[in-house]
Image: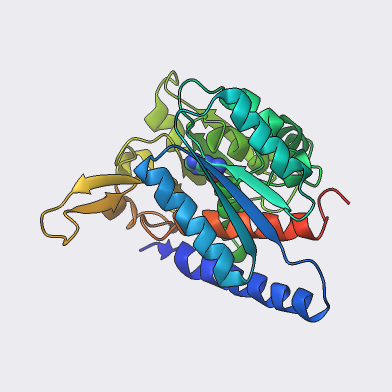
Length: 294
Ligand code: GUN
């Protein structure tokens, strides 16, 4: 039976470490980290995510500012809201929650964020720095995965890592990070996607399988090499009348059949998901301490 990689416990540990550092900053009269979040419109999931981020800031002793903007805001007005935060010396980190309404260019918005404050690590400057293995803000999900591999002391050097999915937010950066000359890293990496032929066979060659394609229970036992490490980034709601909420959460991996053959696996929920907020807090602490851009 596989080792269960506990993202909930690990994220609580990281939050504890961050809270202790904030306490120290306070005692030394230093700058309290301050995160600003911009939320456009009233999408339910986005409201939940941003609410969780603001709450996590409170938990560790950060300051936070939530900027709520109407769905109908023009692109120009949104860009000037970002500019205001860019110019506010009290704010260390800025995130603009995605997705944005269709009339707004996500590229223009992302590029407007000052790289020094881009604690999501989404700006072209910070993605470039990540690819070059320079100091940067690594975005939340990739950071969370690296931190789990590190804290669970999973050997990555020389291993074959197969990434399923090539999104800008997860698959693409993960493939770069796992190939870097770093720890975790030093993998031989294969990135697969919707056009990949014989995806199941390719997946079965992985020592480390990172699944981020967004299809419920896509990865079955036949696609996993016995003893592989399996990281499941997917999260999906499925109806379940036996639950009070009426639904339960599942990942991109068929957990019940893969767990018995893997050597380690992240569950859904409680795996990668909880790590993303810890990552954002970590990056904001780095921003306040000017550790990425001195
Ligand atoms: N939407 C989904 N994931 C993210 C994230 O990590 N950051 C932001 N800003 N929006 C998201």
